[in-house]
Length: 218
Image: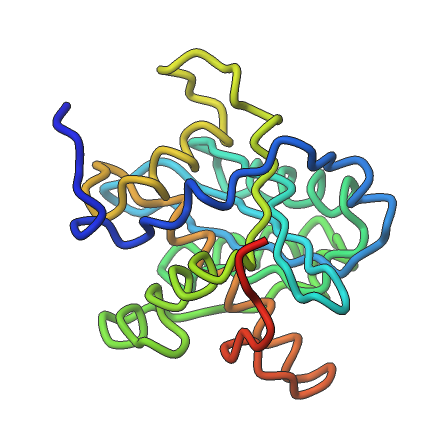
C-alpha cells in the first residue's frame, strides 16, 4: 500500500494524460484509424487483455477507446475480438502475442470464418530485448506520455469505486504503477497496440511516430 516515487515508475507521466472532456462516441464517429493489441492468457495466467487505441490524423495523438479483460476460451476470445471490430470498424491491425495459445486462436478464427477479423490479425513475438528497447519497446510509451501524445478518456471511469475491476480501472492501475503492479497484461496489450500502430504507419506512409515532433504540454 506504500506510495511510489516517480523515479520507481516506468510511466510517471501517465496520470498527466488523463482528460475529462474526451467522448469515445465522438472519436468512433470520426472514423480515425484504430489499433488493437491482445495479450493472451498463458499457462500461469488465465486472463486475456484487449486494448484498442485511436490515432488522430494530423496530430498523431493516441486515444484509448476500449479495454477488455477476461478469462476467455479461444472461441470466446474470438467473439470478443469480433465485438471489438464491430464496435470500432476502423481498426486497421489487431496484434496478437505469438505464444503457444495464438495458434489455437488463429485456428478458431479460420473455423468460424470471420474474414474481416482474419485479415486484420497479425502476430508479435515478445522477448526481453525488444521489450526493453528504447525505440520500440516499453520505454517508448513513457516518451509519448511525457510529450502528451496520449489523451486518456478519464471521464469513462474516474467515478468508479477504488477497487473496481472493469477494464478501464485495471488498465489505469497497471499503467500508473508499473512495474510494481502484480499483473501486467493490460500494459503488454497496450504495448502491442502501439506496435500495431507503428507497423501500420510504416506501411501507410513511412512516418516515424517515435520522433514525436511538435508535441508539447497542452
